Amino acid sequence: MTRDSPVVDAHHHLWDPATADYPWLTDELASIRRRFDTDDLAPLLATAGVDATVLVQTRSSVAETEAFLAVAGATPFVKGVVGWLDLTGPGVVDEIARLRSLSGGDRLVGIRHQVHDEPDPDWLRQPDVRRGIVGVGSAGLVYDLLVRTRELPAAVDTARAMPDVPFVIDHLAKPPIRDGDLGTWAAALVPFGELSNVSAKVSGLLTEADWARWTVDDLVPPVRHALDVFGPDRLLFGSDWPVSLLAAPYERVVAATTEVLDRAGLAAPDRAAVMGLNASRIYRLG
Image (cartoon, rainbow, N blue to C red; front, side):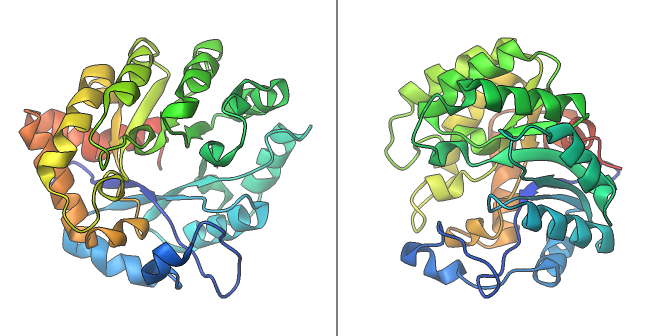
């Protein structure tokens, strides 16, 4: 990675439990159950040498999407927002147009829903959901797939049925690193290799490992498999900050990612692609 190549954190969050409800911020996550904003993140980016970011939704809330766009409009380093809207509603394209008309609306680059929290593993196969995703793609946006192994079959069917929609799988679909058995996850990821419209984020892996005792060795097998499936041109670095603080400080997340890529044998141009160039291209960051 050379410093004339941008480093883009393609996946981070902001939140404030004093002003909104986050059901997933359970007692197990008490250490991060506080406000995190761009003032907290800015010095971390500077120390780690990160140039730009993509801010990603945390709640099923259009109001949050509107607020994130306003943050992006006022924050030079936030180049993109992956927001939320009701995919099952009848006016997805009109809602995207409305969001784009708001302050910071030009930073809207994608839409996401917490698919892995849906009771139905086939939620992505529902006709109204698919109609909404088609609308996301027709508006020129990326659809982020927040899924685990259970939902990968429906995800691959959806992506295969929509070759004109760009998809990004968040957190490599959360490989069960802590359990040590990657076989089912790895097999379910393989079919995406033939789908050129699907990329994936090397993000959120530290918190799928043992938070207190993880090592880079734990991260190498899933990342090597992801490289085999997607290649270096379809992988994007993301920190998953501040969730990542459960396992490591921000700078350590960045360093661990670059070390894993080195251990996987990536040459400098391919590391630069994963660490920033791919995010700039796939999300069409300004």
